[in-house]
Length: 143
Image (cartoon, rainbow, N blue to C red; front, side):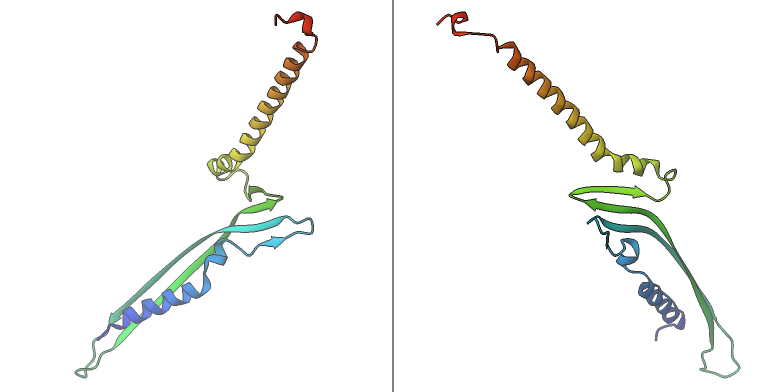
């Protein structure tokens, strides 16, 4: 025979599961008129407690149980994930909180900027190389 506290805890957990699903953490995508896809990301915290006691009775073979349970849930928006023309960015809600997370989110943008700098340097070098040989004529070669 299962104890009533087990049923009480199972009921509490099932009710919490009904309230929270994966769509609570990673929200439903929203598409803006310019085609930007915005996905809200939230932090969900919850806790619950259950307790009870078997109560003494004057009648034999009579089980008497008293118990209770409670739960609390908080949902806090953390960031928005944006997708526009293949460019994905994580925009935190609180700019001062989660600095390491912001740094990790900025890595792709920094890499793209470094690549652009190297591409510009390569173009300058290739254009200088083209200019260096532009004045060479067939008379200058020893063939």
